[in-house]
Length: 334
Image: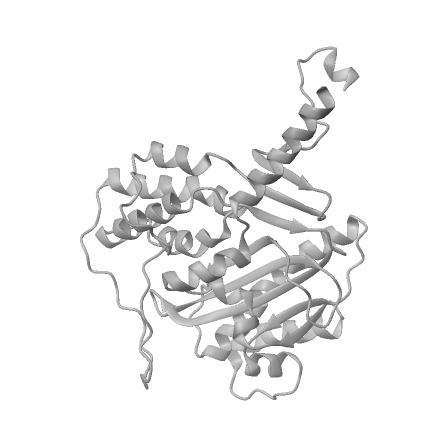
């Protein structure tokens, strides 16, 4: 700092309240830190001239109800609505670009909707614009997200999931929830350090193959994170990776001998190799315990309302924490 001050005007923040535009509210008593970007959503809505909806919107993307009892699952129908002009196309691209940073930084509940809209932004249609307006209504309803991390042993853990045949082009979606926790058989949940909400490029032949594809994608993404943690001094045991598909679990743990699965060969052999190298530990739990499911499909508003408190923290907690900190500063100054 002394050297820099000789030639530059610099500022410092010994309390660590801001980093890369993200506000950090430290709760040392509860060993937690809360991340937020106050005003970001409101500034974005003003930029896009989008007014708050008359009725609250609790889902970031329109929900397609499942057809229970359907014997044959067909691919999603192609969008045949009218194409948009260049102005509207640019509008959609700007919305996805502006909100993608915010979603990755603090509000991960937006990721699936943004991924779906972004997959259509090259050739957007009237339906794409409807989805974009729906998303902006959700952002206006939930403007100030707070992501909370609790102190842990810095052990990486992942929840992996997939949804089969629910995207255009007969493709499937992979989801993942990455968090730092303790080395336990069923690691306790923590705030997400990153999430996977991506469309699997190849066409999956079955639900089991989609689940294996998701395990493959999430495991590959976890490798550099593991290495980074190791280099920071946090020794990593075999990374626990949870799946809710018993077939995929049986394949990667050599409990099921696959037949006629040439499309899956590369994926499950790679997963088996990493299991033998003790880089990963794959285990099964029911879907209700798998947080990765949230980033695999477009859920109804009721599910988003139930899951949002599980993934994010109420802004009231941060406001109360700031009030306490302000009172302490005023008392020390007096």
